[in-house]
Amino acid sequence: MHRIYSCILILIVFGWLSLEAQDSFADRIKWKADTELESFHYLEKRNQVGNWQTEWKTNAEVKFQVSDHLSFSTNIQGNIGQVPDRMFFAIRELFAAYRKKRFIFRAGKQIVDWGNLPGWSPSGLPNRYRYYDFLDTKDEEIGIWALHGGYVSNSFTFRMTLSPFFRPSELYLTGNRWIDLPAEIGLGPGGSQLVQLLYQGSERSDQSDGYQFGLETALQLGKVEWAVNAFHGYNDIPLYRLLLGDPVSETSMDYRLELVYHNMSILSTRLKTYFGDWNGWFEFAHTRSRMMNEMHEPEPSPFYTLTLGTDRVFLFDQPEKQLKLLFQYIYTFNTQDIHYAPNDLDHVFRNTLLTRIAYRLNYAVSIELTALAELETAGYYFRPGITWKITDALHLSGGTELLGGKDRGFFGYYRDNARTWFSLAYSFIPKRKK
Image 1 (cartoon, rainbow, N blue to C red):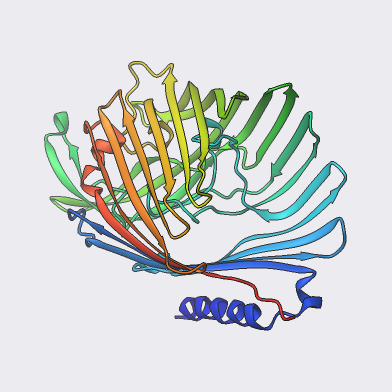
Image 2 (image 1 turned 120 degrees about the horizontal axis):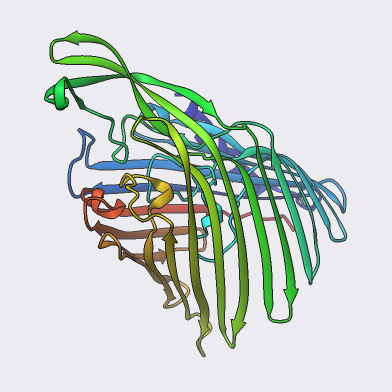
């Protein structure tokens, strides 16, 4: 119940700020806040989880400018969901930032994006999320305690990030539609005796170095930006194995799930350029991760990812109209004859075409489409949506998500998670007194 009160408190405080902010106060403090009620209706039932998934999320960001160079920022979030683990109040970011000329430095809890592309980036695999929903990760990023510093100029960029503490993504092992816990196991000769498994919780096994370190170096060479990224740390999503307990009866036994966290390293190179009004980009990445072998032990699993993409913004004579296009191709290799689980989030994209279209008809109505074709597993994902801007602060959105394909691929495995959705969002707009 206190989490509900926390969400309401955020709304009251920022509603009051929007009405009562004084010039002397507003000169040093910048803030924004929004609240959104989002609901999904699934077309099929899955794993005894209901067809409706509804949540109310409130976000607030505050930045206090202490001096010309020093500032403090925080990002807080409250969420009300249908399961106990989705009732939370969290400080997502809380950091100090120092900027002088071309040097930047941040210390504290902050959301780190290890990738840097307009589309999907293989360098972003270690990004931290709350994985309650594998498709909708908007506003689900998790902040980590880190030091970030660098030098940025028109022709050269150097950035470095160090996070000394272990903070993986959050997995909701029960009470959602995206994680299937083992229900039975075959024992005896040839696994002929099926035994029902009764889940009794999980435990963590850490085989990683426990820290994260990343750096980026970029050069601007005329029309071309060339960058090299390196990351070493741990995979935010663990491997798992069963820890069988004592039999409960002749046909059932208890078990616990061991979550095995392991090292991950990524080395990538990236190019960005433009051709007239079109932007073009390329990334090639080598990822060294782990996978479980037949003996249920982690073993090295290196693979390579190549991605090419382009995007453009079209402007029209009518200033309220706008069209954005993005096309991307993703190919992963050195994975031949390797069987990945269909719910392995590191290998969703293997031979994939991605398209995003956003068209603003006027200042009130916009439509968007995300379409994806996974060629190796005949998978597809189709997400059309429409947004009506009722006022500058109040937006109503709705759409559908369809997915399918072969069972061995992500989109085919989760085909019964096709759904419709709608959201009602309100943004608090600061109003300064004259």
